[in-house]
Length: 112
Image (cartoon, rainbow, N blue to C red; front, side):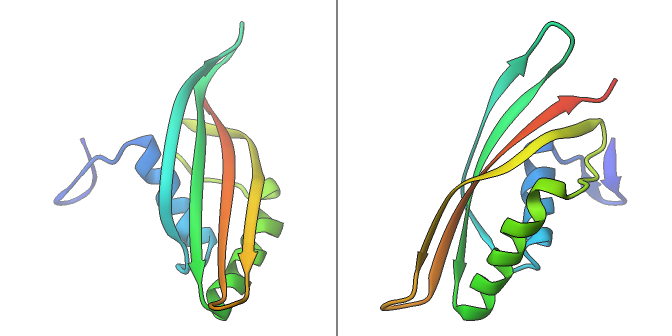
């Protein structure tokens, strides 16, 4: 199975990284991502922790917009529903260089 002609299928983690970078208007670098299985009596899925880095004032402005948009953003991840998306940490520095690091947690549920 392939995403598009000539491209092998991407996993959920890669699709999520791509979606977050797009939401960050292409200004984010994924520094770290982890995932762990999650289940309840009725649902099964994964909890993802993603750390994004932004360098420069334009990128940091895009990061601020990501922070505002993330909780209500409608992700299009085939076979997955994003049940929760929150920003859990922000480190914003202006000196000596304008930089921001955002940590997000997202709960993805298998859409069956």
